[in-house]
Image (cartoon, rainbow, N blue to C red):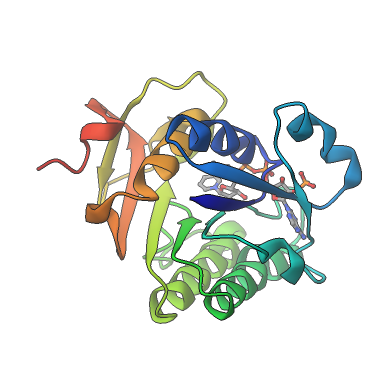
Length: 210
Ligand code: NAP
């Protein structure tokens, strides 16, 4: 499928672009700065410009699926978290619906399905992710929601724990998150399902076999 990767210039997003190709998809990186374009063109890809705080409708031209991997990051205030992680994601879902997108995969966060109780410092973030996920579930789109634990820059192991609920806040390399999202994109057993995701013992391609 031709897959719009929202947040393609991010640390997970760059892995997603590569992993999608491994799984036979055609990534279309969405970036918000022209300086971010050449790195993808060097890989033979055709990025599109789009900013979640502005207009990004043109990014959906000829797109079949969407992976949302954007976020305001840990160094911005709650206002940006609401604007990007919540409202940006909600707008992306609504545009996907409008353009008849076949599948929407959301990169959420562990505990976003149970935002209470969380420490005051991250409660706005958990609620932003929670509201975006709930909006996607209610949208009528075909979806998969993945809630990873704490992200690391370690090399991927290809082995994870993917379950509807995982206790605690374990870690997972960004590369393994990207591969799991790419795998689940067209996996029938992941249709309209939500998962927690941390490092584990099961090969990514075998996670939904039982
Ligand atoms: P990242 O490197 O900060 O990437 C976030 C991407 O979002 C960046 O490419 C950024 O664009 C893009 N973005 C921000 N504002 C945008 C806007 N207005 N329009 C379009 N794109 C915009 O983050 P990451 O490490 O890849 O993580 C991805 C997400 O995983 C996080 O945002 C978070 O929600 C989620 N998550 C994180 C953790 C964790 O432990 N850190 C755990 C669970 C889930 P620029 O490159 O132009 O800045």
